[in-house]
Amino acid sequence: MNSRAPSKARTKGAKAAGARGRRKTPRASTSDIHAKIAETPSSPAAESAATDEAPALPDHHRCCAVTRERHATDDLIRFVLDPEGVVTPDLAAKLPGRGVWVTAQRQHVERAVARNAFARSLKRPATAPPALGAQVEALLQRRALESLSFATKAGLIVTGFMKVEAAVEAATLAALIQASDGAADGVERLRRKYVAICAARDQAPNVLAGFTNSQLSLAIGRSNVIHAGIKPSGITSKFLFEAHRWQKFQHDDAACGV
Image (cartoon, rainbow, N blue to C red; front, side):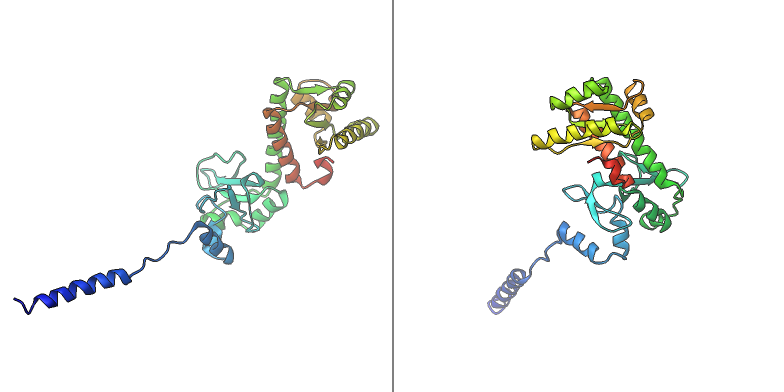
């Protein structure tokens, strides 16, 4: 009995020493995962990085299915498949199903269609309409005009040259809205005054000049709207977001204001 005791003691000591010697393998962090994906843009992992299945970053960034660059979701457009497998824009990013993210510019959406990026990212057949870019542009414009209608109902809109000019001089506007087909002399005169007053107050001017007279008149519910101003509000912030999103999608610097 006594001869076995030292052997058992040695066995227990060896097990304890082995347990102390083993180290746990550290788990990879989220940043490590995204760095690995970025290093292999042509890998299956990179394809899925442009979809909803990619690990979500804390600052709400996603990978564009075309450029592989990461952007805030506000600068991207989400697409899903409808029941027939047709690529459908999800501008509010709320539709069910796996989504694909593309930079919110028409040229990138058209490249996604040409390169079959939706099917590659989703790893399943996907029919992308050839006119998908035009469809997205029309939907973005409609959202902006609908937001303008909400602002009108909230009493935030001023129309008419004289009233808008007075609001410009009082510096009570969050943005100046002018019809793209308005008379050049009146449009330019009011715009110059607005820009000058903003500069004197050390404020960035915010001019929206992409909507036509008929579009503004319909959205605001008044006839022949050439000049309009919008007062600061949470509803105004929503409208400005939608309007700038539409203008940036066109990538038309002339329509984006000053």
